[in-house]
Amino acid sequence: MHNLVHSLQAITEHMVSQLDYVTEEQIIFFIDQREEIVLQLQQIEITDADRQEYGSIVQGVLQHDNVITTRLEELRSGVSEDIQKVSVARVQNTAYSTPYIQDSYYFDKKK
Image (cartoon, rainbow, N blue to C red; front, side):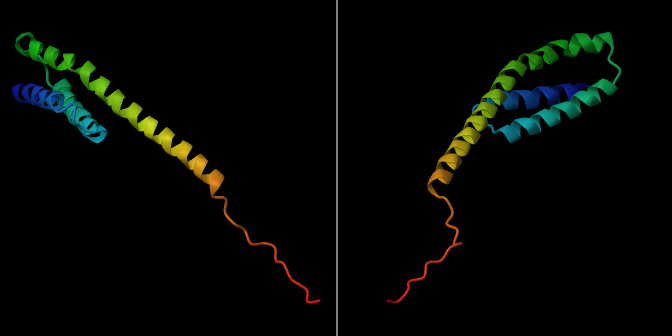
């Protein structure tokens, strides 16, 4: 249990320290790691002594959730804006570049 709680704390603190530079994929990888640790912790029977010893560490980890969630939402909104810009550019581009379809021919007659 000691190793799991401290690894949870370590990866969370590392993520918070690198939060300005991480990508959405790195946050998702962090969430997957964290989920694995939490699942392992749920399988362990926790005593009252463990709750007292590790409770403050877990509360500290949970306090970082809002900061990480905010950063993830910022990244997602940035991606949404980029997708919207690409869609607008695509619509504007198609207005100017209509494909030429060669379906008619002109024949000049000699006089």
